[in-house]
Amino acid sequence: MGSANYDSSINLNLSIGSLQGSDILRIKQLHDATQQSFHDAAKLQKADRSTEEMRLAVEENGRLKRMLAIIRERHCALRAQVLRLMRSSAASSSTSMRTSNRKIGKQEINGSRRVSNRQVVEDSRPRIVKIYVRDGDLVMRDGYYWRKYGQKVIRDNPYPRAYFRCSFAPLCPVKKKVQRSAEDKSVHVVIYEGEHNHVQPSPGKPLNYMT
DNA sequence: ATGCGTTGACCGGTATG
DNA sequence: CATACCGGTCAACGCAT
Image 1 (cartoon, rainbow, N blue to C red):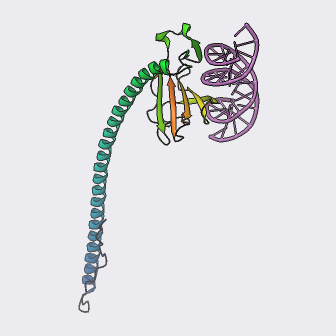
Image 2 (cartoon, protein in one colour):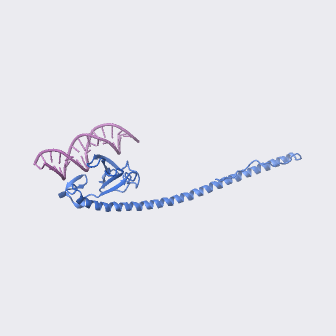
Image 3 (cartoon, rainbow, N blue to C red):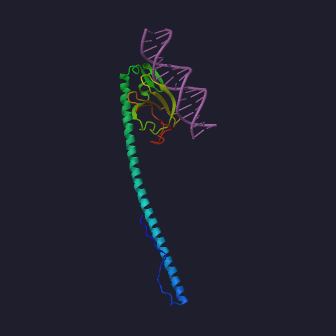
């Protein structure tokens, strides 16, 4: 910042040969007073600069707050959109799974146990959401806390499948399966089963691990 | 001490002969 | 029907905090 320098030493260039002692004393007092006033002026200038800096900081803070509010608003809108997409894809995947997959045509995923067709009750089937996430995206940052409880190598895929349980609420029934895609190893396939029976602990916050 | 990840064992449903 | 296979879960163990 531009700051003015104040020279506190003053050369009065006086010829003091003809002056009395009292005059010298007065001049010295005057000199001291002048120096003091320069000091005071410098202090005032410094205080003014601090006030200006504080005003700028307050303005900047206000701008940042407005930006944060906008970001938060957009985040909420995006989140709502993602949830809508996840729900619509869940609806379509659950119907396509019944017809396209040989095995799933004979069995349904229902909570922790697979059950036969006879036991399937349409309304009791947990919501299943399948999403594909690239490395570095929110694979493990979906806002919930997950605890890994198993890992298994699955047929037709060299990469193991990891099993997670929602650990935020002890009774939360939601499970999550994460597996690298066999076709594109940079893509994770994340399958959510069920619905959370609690609020999201902290949107976007990193989970215990990736979860 | 507590919580978490790893991993082999186990269980139950399905496919196959 | 017997059995192999498969996906999902359990639980012991070790590690990190």
